[in-house]
Amino acid sequence: MKSPVYTLNLSAAQRSVLEWLTAQGAVFELITADVEEIAHDCGTSTSTVYDALARLETLRLVENPDPTRYRINPRYFFASNPEIRRLVAEALEAPEVTPDARAEAPRKVGNVDARRRRTIKAVRDEE
Image 1 (cartoon, rainbow, N blue to C red):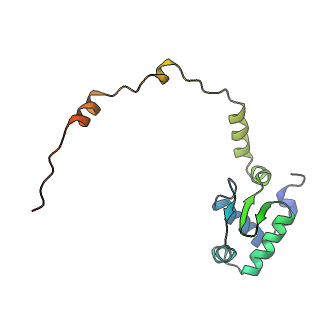
Image 2 (cartoon, helix red, strand yellow):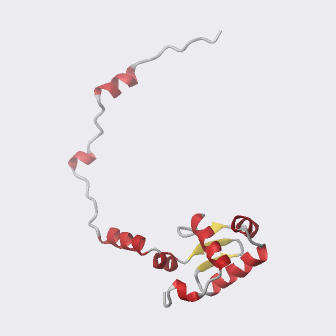
Image 3 (spheres, rainbow, N blue to C red):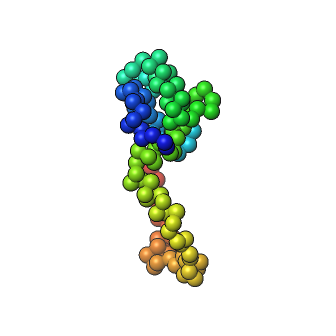
C-alpha cells in the first residue's frame, strides 16, 4: 500500500462500510452484500453507501467483481492490523508439523469409552 489508510481522508460513511464488510467476513472471501442492509446497519442512506462503495473501489480498498459481491483488499486489512500481519508472517515461516509413528497408529479407546459403547440402555415405554 503506497499511502497509509489514514492519509486517504476517508469519510465516516466510508469507514463504516469498510468496518461492516470486515465484520461480515469480506476479508476472507467475496460476500454478497445488499446496499439497503449496509445502509440500515450503518445508520445511513443507500445513496451514501453507494457513494462510499464507489470511492472505496476507486481507491482499490474494496474489490467488486460483480454488482452485489464485495471483498476487502487484503493489503488494506493487513496494513490496518499489523499484529495479525506479523502472526501470519510467523506462521508462514514456521516449520511444518510432521506426524510420528504414534500419530499414525489407530486411536486407543479407554476402558470407560469401550464399556459405554457396549452398554445397551433400556428405553421406557410412554404409555
